[in-house]
Amino acid sequence: GRVDFSGVWRFREMLPFFRTDDDIVTIGEGRTMLQQADLLARQLGMKPGTTLLQYEGLNPSGSFKDNGMTAAFTHAKMVGAKKVACASTGNTSASLAMFASLSEIQGVVFIGSGKIAFGKLSQALDYGALTLQITGDFDDCLRRVRQIAVDVPKLGIYLMNSVNPFRLEGQKSIMYRVLEARGWEPPDWVIVPGGNMGNCSAFGKAFAEMRELGLIKKVPRLAVINAAGANTLHRLYNEQGVRWNGGKYDTQKVGAHYTWMNEQNWQAHTVASAIEIGRPVNLPKALRALDVMDGVVREVSDEEILEARALVGRYGFGCEPASGASVAGLQKLLAEQVISPSDTVVCILTGHELKDPNVTVKYHTGIDMKSVQDLAPKVEPHGKLSNR
Ligand code: F0G
Image 1 (cartoon, rainbow, N blue to C red):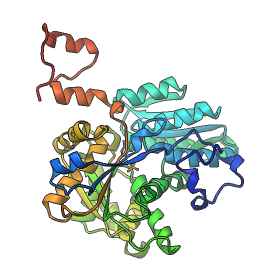
Image 2 (image 1 turned 90 degrees about the vertical axis):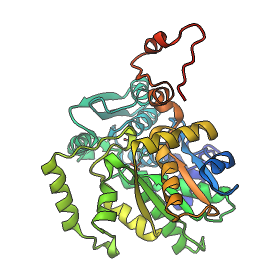
Image 3 (image 1 turned 135 degrees about the vertical axis):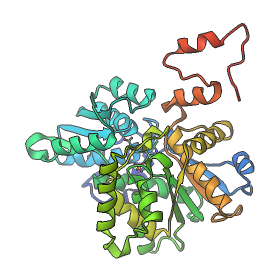
Image 4 (image 1 turned 120 degrees about the vertical axis):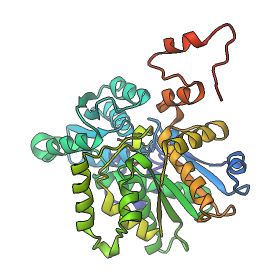
C-alpha cells in the first residue's frame, strides 16, 4: 500500500514510534538507488565494482532530507503541530516546504542572508512556506528558530531541524537501502559529507541498532567529510583529539574551541553552501557514530569538492557541490592509503545536480551567472561555452 511504497516506511519496524499506518505522512520518499559507478571508479583508481553511489538526490524534493522529514512530519501530526519551522542552508527548507504544502501545515523557514542555492530557494517559495531571510549564517538561523519553537502546545510551532530525533530515525533508512541493495552485505566504507552532522549520526544509530539486533555481522567504517572552510568536526576530532569516550567526551575542549571561534569571529565559508556550518548541533551524536563505525574525519578544499562534483557529473548522475565532498573524501582517503582500491565504498550523494546549477555553469564556463543573460556575450556564433 501507500506506506510500503515509501523507501523509509518499508523499514517501519526499525522506526517504532508511530501508532498505526494511518499516522504516517509520506510523499513517496526514499525511492533512491545504489549505483555501481565503474566509470567513476576507473577515474579514481578504484577497482571495478567497488565504487557505489547512493543517489539521494532522487527524492521528491531532490535531497536526502525527505527521509527524515517524513518521520518528523509523522510525529508532528501525532502531537498536533499546526506550524513547522526550520533553519536551513536550503535542502531542509525545500523538503519541509514540500511536506508542509502536502499535509496542510504552515511551514516557516529561516535562511541566512545570501546563503542559499537558487534551486532550493525556488522550492521553498513555490511550495508556499513563509520564507524569512535572517542577517547572518545558518548557525544564527538555527539559534533563532530554536527560540521560537520551544513550546509546541503553546505556540504550535514544531522544530524540523535535525536536533529533532525523529528526523534521524527516518534517515537511518538510507543505510537500510544500501544494505538491501547489496543483499545485506555491508560495504567496507560509507562516506558522507558532514554539515550539521545529522546524517552521519543517523547512520551510526542505524548500525548500532542492527548490530545489537544481530542483523549484521560487520559494521562498515564511516568517513565524514567536512569542507575545509567549515571544518569544526575535523578540528575537534583530528586536531584536538575529541572522542565519544563512552559519552564522556571532552566538553571543555569543545567549549574552548567554540570560545576561540567566537573570539576570532570565525565564519564558515565554502562553495558547498549546504554544509557551510560552523557549529554542528549533532556533534555529540556524530562522535558516537564515529565510535560505532570506527570512523575517520577529513576536510577537503573547495577546489577538491568542485573537481569531484564534476567527476560525478561526468560519470555518475551528477550531484550538488556538498555531495561532491563524499567523492573528494574518497580520493583523499585513497591517496592516503586508508582506503584501498579493492575496498567497497558507498559515497552518499546527498543532493540533486539541479539544486545548485550556478556552481556547475561557473565551473565549466568561468562565468558567475546572476541570470542567463550573463551567458549571452559568450555566445558568439557557435561559440564554445565550456572552458574545460
Ligand atoms: N549534503 C547536503 C546536500 C545538505 O543539504 C546537507 C545539509 C548536508 C549534506 C549535510 O548533512 O547536516 O546531516 O551533516 N543541509 C542542511 C540544510 C543543513 O539546511 O539543508 P548533515
